[in-house]
Every structure is written in structure tokens, then in C-alpha cells.
Length: 271
Ligand code: SAH
Image (cartoon, rainbow, N blue to C red; front, top):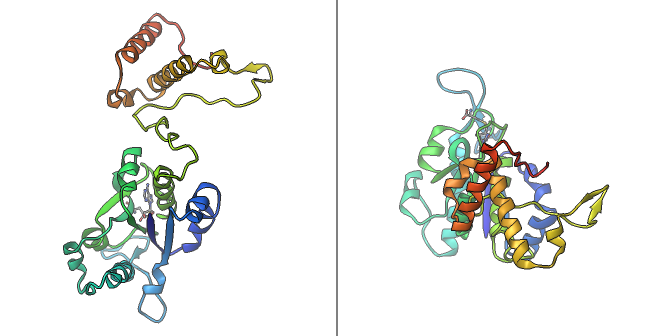
């Protein structure tokens, strides 16, 4: 899978792509991230990429021309490779097959595990990172095909959000994680939070690992994990439960939890 990232600060993307799982995914040829410096596409002598907002007010706004030029140049590269003619006007972008062109913005649809899964189905994705007050509205209207926010807070730029998207999507690509089933149990994979994990030592400062995990009884372990997962979700993110696929046994377990809490019995796993 290939990501093209358009940014004014390419160096912000460097280090996270050079470590751990993303680095390995790139080396294994499963992921490619090509970072494009929007400044290279500013046509004037001083490579100006931002300007004052019309209507006044503080802050700077990213100019539309360099952003359009950068994205179109990369789209044209691909069209040339396929012996298709170049694009002529910005609007013509909407009449050709193109990869998702995602604008990172706090005003976009919220990035969730389901959106990550949706994006992982694409061969190629373009990510546009804003800075300052954001990008000229015409980028959103006539260039971007999608808008994504990583949460209800405002950052200084779209580079960290772009990395968040790349990271979450890459984890889902086949062959990236050592264990192919690893993402199935993850928190949010099925609207439930994941069960707790333990590793050696079995006794750490007097705190022991639950016996069931040492029992070697896989059915018991599975049941314990499922119940922990349900309990955590019920305690921490009850808003997720209606979206989860629950068996009869799950529903009975949740009913027991509700009864316990109504009876004043603490249900915290830390007690
Ligand atoms: N004035 C804008 C925010 C600009 S923040 C507004 O109120 O909507 C500057 C840039 O950071 C944005 O253009 C966007 O690319 C990025 N950004 C900030 N917060 C973000 C978030 N929660 N999700 C995705 N991108 C974000």
C-alpha cells in the first residue's frame, strides 16, 4: 500500500517511519510512504505557501495553488505511467478514477478503527496536511475527496494525524503484524475493548497473574478473556456495547454485571 503525504514539514514524518513495525513494513515492501514538500510546488521566487485570510483576522491560511499543483503532479505521474493524458483543470479531478485524497482537519469525519479498516482496502491514499489556520477552502471543496479528524481537539498541523492514519492502517495490512490474528481481538475491532495482557514474571512484587492464564486450559482462557473484555467495555465505554456482536452468554454475563453493580458490589477488575 502506498501513501502520498503532502506537507510543509516533511521532516516531521521521518522518524516514526524509521522505527519498529512501520519500518519493517516498508522494508518488506508492504508499505510505501512518499512525502511531498508542498513548498516545492510554490511557483513564485520566494516559495510562498501561505497568506493572510480574506476578511481579516489572525493567522495565516495555506494557499490553494501549491497544494493543487503538488497533488495533481503526483496524480499525473500515475496517469502518465498508465499512458493516460494529464489533467487540465482542478475540476477535472472529479471525472477521473483517483485514490482517496484525504484532507486532515478537525472538521472531518472521526477516525475510528472502522475507518482504518475501510482505508486499508485501498492500494493508494493521498493525505494533505494543513498548518496554521488551515488550508484554503477550495482545497476541501475541489481537491479533497474525504476529510478526516483524529479527534475533537486541535493540533498545530496535519502531520501527526497523517501518521496516526498511516500507523493504524498499516497494522491492518496482511503480513505486517507477526500474528495474522492479532488485530481481531484488538480494542475496537469488534466494538469491545481488549482483555488485559500479562507476561512473565508470574509474580511481580507479590502481584500475581490470574491463575486461569497459567492453567493451559484454552477454553477457560478464552472465556476469561471474553468476560474481561465485556467487563472493561461495560465499565469504561458502555457507549460501545450496542455496536458489539454479543452472544447469549455475553448478554447473561452483562446482566450479571448490572445486577452486581445494582447490589453495590464493586465490579472493578483492580479490586
Ligand atoms: N482553524 C482550524 C484548525 C487549524 S489546525 C479549525 O478551527 O478548523 C491546523 C491544521 O492541523 C489543520 O489544517 C489540520 O490539517 C491539522 N489538524 C489539527 N487538528 C486536527 C485533528 N484533530 N485531526 C486532523 N487534523 C488536524
